[in-house]
Image (cartoon, rainbow, N blue to C red; front, top):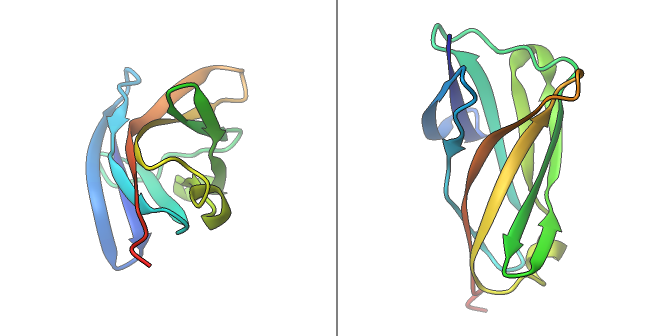
Length: 130
């Protein structure tokens, strides 16, 4: 059973489509945020047949790391029955982040306490030109 992770900023703009295998392969997704801006990703997890994966009982958590600094991501299930979840960082947090390349990961914690890393990648924090 394959699943597809479709990352959207809005319903009209698809950013990335990644194949997630049922053996818990991790989707790689790299992103960029301007220091002081809000970073939000809103993926929808569906099967290869475009059927939403039920996220009932799933908690989403994640973090970003650069050197020894670890920052928790703001994560949530948006619509469990539609396979929709969200992760990112508020503007106040990105404003204080060091410029450059960070690593991040997002995990599902299932009702049975199983932990599954679902997305990981690089987050580039770029300088605001103002």
